[in-house]
Image 1: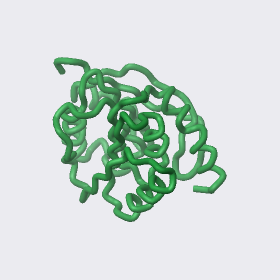
Image 2: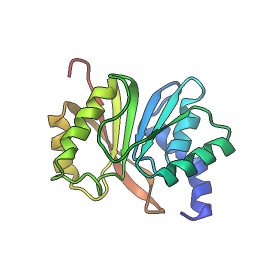
Image 3: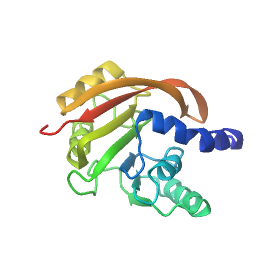
Image 4: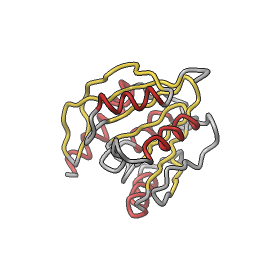
Length: 182
């Protein structure tokens, strides 16, 4: 990503994620966080009372993210290394929000791990959790069906400026919720 875009999103990313529904004090899971384009703004929003779990299978990306966090003085990001397994090493109902941004090139509609992933997201989400999905590389209508089958309810389609493949553009995220008792 260009340094100009990185700087722009560093400034505007917080506003974008606040409009998505992230709040101060929350515990957030950024699943497939990469080098932290969304993790860094998340950490700034949730503040010292909140936590951001940054989960990725790419150790180099996580190293870069943690270096960026140190440079910015952010101490509320917790790294979660994974081998690509869908098991999320967090307690049941331990997060207020989950970002699944641009991961569906890896978890396709036909991937047998997708239902397992959604089950894990459901397990770690505390009602009325926000599950925000950036559905690049996948049929969003069919993905919505899978999420509803997994116990989530579509709250809104949110249009804003998002980063994809190092390019900023107006796009849509799907915001779901996990309701109590589901």
